[in-house]
Structure formats: C-alpha cells, structure tokens
Length: 597
Image 1 (spheres, rainbow, N blue to C red):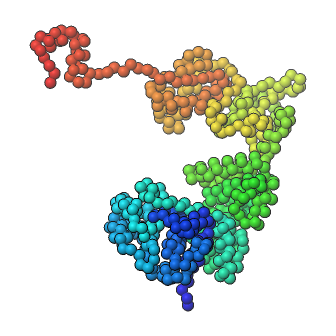
Image 2: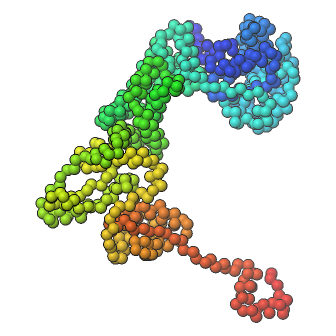
Image 3: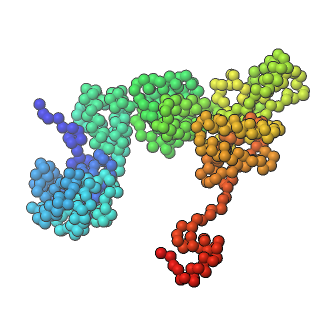
C-alpha cells in the first residue's frame, strides 16, 4: 500500500505558471531572471497558505537552471533542477527561523555564505518565518545581508512583516502576497478533483474556498477531509455537514420571513438553527453577510463582489429584487449592533430574537413612512371605546393616567396631558387621548397609536441620545414646596433601594434650592459629583415632572467654589505665618541674627 500524500504537498506548484493567484509576483520574478536583474535579498510576506515558501523554492530552482526556458521557467531536467527536486542540492539551503532563531544559528549561516557554490552561479538561502529571529540575530545578520558575496542570494519569508526590523526591510525587495480569490481557488480545486477522478459540485467547492479565507493550503486540507468523509464525491450537502457551516437556504428562508413580517416563522427558524448546534453569534454574523450579499446584488456594477457559485448567485439576484435598499441597510445596522452586544449580554438568545423582531417590522415602517404627509396625519387606528359607569369611575380613570416612556426615547408628543373632548362631540364621559408612541403593528389591536411621520422614522440614534431622554410635555399644574420636598424624598428613597450611594450623598447633603419658579439648583462639591448628577438628571426630571405633572421643572448643578487655605509646612512658611500675626517675632529674629535649621 502506497503512502498517502496530502494534496497540499502532492500538487504543490513546481513552476511560476502553476502558482495560483499571485500573477503580479511571478511575472516580476520571471522578468528579473530573464533580464539578469536579481536583487541580493527578497522578502516574501503575506497571510498563511498563499504561496510564499513555494515561490521561494521555485525562484531558487529557476535561478540556477542550466537550460532556462524562453518564458523564464526552469527546465526541470538539468542536473541542478533534478538535485533540487530530489532535495539533495548543495547550493540551496533552507532555514526555519522559528526553531533556529539564536545569534549562533545566524553566525553559522554567515560562515556557510563564505563557501562559494558548486557548478552553478548562485548559492541561495531561504529563511522561513524570519520574524521569529531574535534581536541579536537580526543585528548579526545585517552586515551580511547588506553586502553579501556576489554569488549569495537571500530569500526571506514571513507572515508578520511588522515584526521585522526596518533596517532589514530596507535591504530587501519586498513582495506582498495577496489572499487567493475564491474563484481562483475553486477552479484549482476542480482541476485537482478531475486529476484524482473525484466527483464534485461547484457549490461545494465554492464553500470550501470561502471557508479557507484566502489560504490555498487550508482549502486543500479541507478538500482531503471532505473527500474522505463523502467517499470521493464532494457535494454541497457533504461540505456543509462536515465543515459545520450553516446552509444558505436557512438565510434565504429567514430573510423571506422577515420580508413578509412573519414573526412566528422567523423565531421558529432561529430555534431550529440553535437546535442543530449552531451558535447565535455565528447565525447573526452569517445573516449580516447575507444582507450584504443582497445589497451588492442590487446593482450590476457591484455584482462582481459576490463570491458565490452561479447557482447561489441566481438565488441572491432573485431575492434582492424583493428587498429594498432601505430595508437592507436598516437590517444590516440592526444585525451589526446585535453582533457587537451579543457577547456582553447575559441572555444572548433574546438579543438575537429581539434583533429579528425589529427587522421583521421594518417593511411596514417604511411603507407607512412613504405615505404622503396628509395621509400620515390622518391614518390612525381605531380607538377602543371606553365606558364609564359613574362620574366617580370616570374621575378615577382620569387620575390614573400617567405619561408613559419607552426606553427613555419617545416622540415629542409622547407625554401629552389629558385633553377634554371637543365640544361638538356629544358624549358625557371624558375621553383620554392616547400617547403617540412608536409601537409595532402586532400591538395595534390592543393599543391606539398614531403613526410616526417620516421625520420621526429617519431620526438617527445619535440625535436621540443628544436630546433629553424625557421629552417635555404640555402639563403645567401648580404644586407647593411641600409637594416638591416630598417628591424629592421619594426619589432619594428610590436611589437608596437601587444602591446608588454616590448619588444618595449628593441629594442628602445638599437638597435642591429654588432659584425661580420651577427652576432649582443643587450644590455639588467637585467635578465628579457634577458628572454623576448630569448622568442622573434625565431620570430625575422624568420622576419629578411625572409626579408633579409639571414639565417646566428644571434642576441644574453648580460646583461650590471654596477658597483653599494653604497651610504652612516648612520652617520658613511657619515663621512667616507667625510673623504676620505678631510682627515682634521678626524684630527678634533680626536682633539676634537667627536662622532656620
């Protein structure tokens, strides 16, 4: 039984032409060899698995080829090429800097450089993972790298260029390797599958290429793994099952449910995804990518940014015609915010479900926002009639109405006071106008709401945060100083229950003092207390304005500026302090010529 050779080694490129996805580098190197303009040192840098070491070996073999081809490639049949391919060339040396990173290893390398090559023109030294060299090793290598013998060429390779000394970088020609494109990687995997007589589906190879994230070596390792898993037939289903990838169909189905505003189906699909063992963060990240792909599918000029197979691309094109740009941008924003706050949340599942419900109601919001202004003001859901049996009951209903707040962000009319019924309507019982707040359509059956205008819908989160979290209302009822004091005592008790000791100290030591009607001032001792009060001020306004039913109440803070008395510390300061109080001490000092020790 022959030993199995992994595809990454078996199909490692042996010529510049066979290198995948690095045409800008291979062409430059071939031209340099043909024109005999080789540098003394090369630095190949880039992410893992993109061909740095492979290109270094191909360059080393081609430089010493005895029968160089017209296209700049090595012949592969001369003595130099054969010895290199067999691994017994005396003129090409490879050093792994990860395990040979001391100054002694570099000194040994410098001693070898002094020995000229045998039967060929150049002696090549390939140093892989060169960023692992120590500081002393780099310093010992500097002089040799700057002025090597005419027959010595150094090829350095690294994944972390920023860790290499600038003095080393200035002595090398630097080649930056790109991540390999998904299309190039998928076509390379298809060519290998044909050579190995392995069945495959284009969608499956594209998934492998996307999962590899630009590294061909990772793609080939997954390719071998899936060949073993599927028994020599790479299908889309076998790839997503083996690599634990969420199926595209889930994202398409979830997006369809979101566009049709089907709350139940959306939550059930998310539950099914969790039951299959996928993490919520993985799902929300994939959903963001899905929205991004739908967005780039809206325009033919950005369609090239869609790195999927043709079958999946057709699905994206079909669904992108249904989703609007406004929906996709808003959904992307909500999904991104959910992704950022996911790890910090204690109830992570609820974070994702809340984001899905927000996205689910976006279509109706945009449809209502696009209505003409005249229709927006007239569109209002039917109010549920209220029956009041007696005058006492109606009074109780009126007194029990409080101004609601939703997350401290409401419309400017969210705190409307109770208004009497217009005179032209003949009804004995008082009517209470519902506060106009933004509520999803699913709650419309039990709550009377007014549809927000386009200006309210498009108001950004940053603008809302800059405003007072409790928007002013219209109620301006009178109250007594005793009512205000009792309200403040209730708020202090509330702070005590919440454990806000620093704020409790501020309000206990210095209660608010009236400046004018509805304007109060509280004295704080320093900037820290002022910042604490400023953060708590919206909640305090919310509490006082609601309790006292007066939305003109304003409380501000002022730092108490106390004059700092400097205490005498040194002997000289103590003497001058005493002399200011009793000038005779100064005469005594001058008379006896006294001094300080």
